[in-house]
Image (tube, rainbow, N blue to C red; front, top):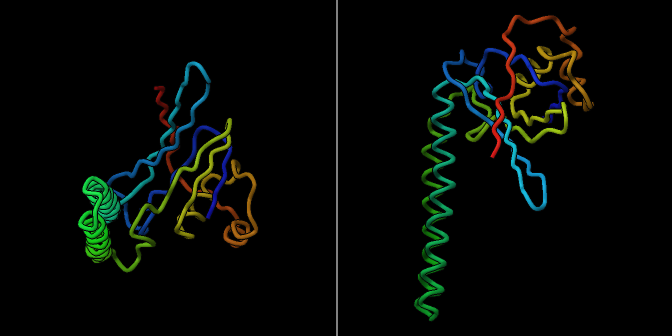
Length: 187
């Protein structure tokens, strides 16, 4: 669910964004944008969402599976193109097939670490970007999205019908949580 908020400081509910357990670490999400033509400046904003260590592990395992698949696939294609013959074509095809098989095995291992309350094997929250004070997040868990929207009720903008339905029954009661600001980096 897309959640848009306006501001530079937000309250993050103290529950894992993936499984709703008590958080003991954070997962950093970031977005970058560049400006300028002759001198390009890149600005990156990051937010730390509460996570439990178990969910960070399955997210990292899933990310590693994707990375390994790309590396093996690209290497297979490079070797296949270098040989540029039937042997090269066969090596390229076998390499990509092996990479896909490896991906399925690694993702199965990552999925085996999920708890019954985890919403996904990958990242449960993404920071899509910002425009001025408008910050845009994609939240997989409807429960975490609801808690985040309730905690930041005065800063919500561009609410979708789905988001409205999700938070209407709550009455927007106040939650006691600490406020967080984005960390900024200039490159």
